[in-house]
Amino acid sequence: MDYSKGTIEMARLIAENCTSCQRCMKDCLFLQQYCDDPKKLFQQFLAEGLEPIVPYSCMLCGRCTVVCPLKLKLDEAFLAMRQDLIKEGLPLKQLKSVEMHQKLSTSKLFTAVNRGEEK
Image (cartoon, rainbow, N blue to C red; front, side, top):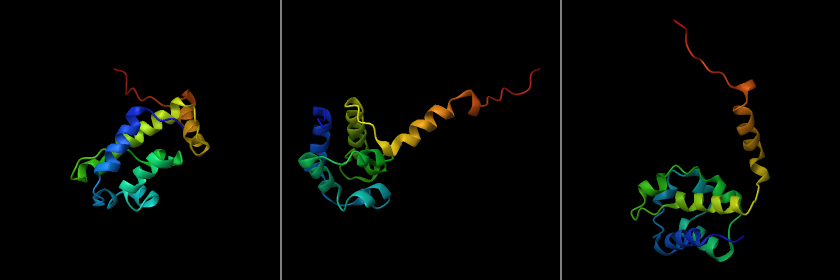
């Protein structure tokens, strides 16, 4: 997978500056599941990449940035990884149900509009 220069730069910034204080991990089930230290996770990304499911597992809530003393933007880095994966046309079979949900949730069959009473 060829990631964009911007994505690599974001990951490098986190890998080089993260102090491993782990404040971001306290409330983040995603980070707790995929790493013991976000610094090491981004070092791994730079060295060998990550399984595509990893960046897609981040909820992009931004809590990591809020609690980070350096305001490192892990969520933005994971979003950039996702965008690069999409540009490469890499579909994730784990996300097929999401694709179906998106199609069905906007269909007339499953969509209702309540316009209220006419006067």
